[in-house]
Image (cartoon, rainbow, N blue to C red; front, side, top):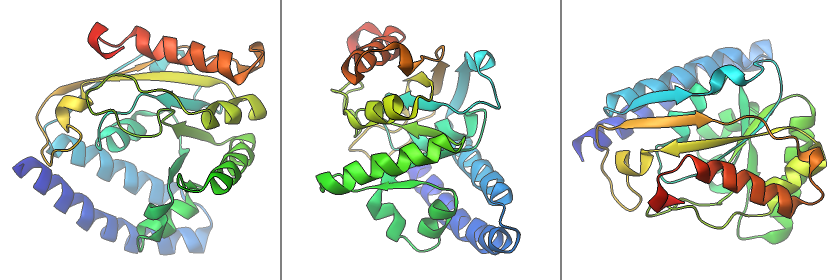
Length: 234
């Protein structure tokens, strides 16, 4: 619990610091690179502060200049700060609409082209997918969690259709990612961070244009993510 308290206090203070320093710079220059670098340093340092060690595999097979839709399993609150700094380029994220209402953080997310998602409103959720399509078609990569929420026991939950509509409509390659160990680092339902080693595996990009339907693409992506999970989590 002490590690969790330390990390939350650090991230809370750092968000204010990065926002006060980075947002004015971004507004003046029109370039979010400095703010993004601040955010990535803070996320990565906070994860290390919690005693979590990251091992990343397969990143070398990706083109750092290409746009991808990263799709990952999701089991912990620590997934985003652990994952995003390890991606080879700046990304956008489909995030809960509630986060955009947080002062400074919400403004920063808008500047970073993050896409708000209201999971309680079907029409708004559909609009979010269309906005995400426009975002990735500009050359911006995106990270989505196709399960839509965190798994409590680490096992894969059923996938939502929205992310695969995004992939089919945009034609942007999908990179499946398997996260192993974050459910032990910060278990869902607990306010505690444990010092564990987390493995993040990048799989080979999948061309959505080779699939006849989003359902067949969904099965393929889920099978690839599951292939690297321990047997009991598949």
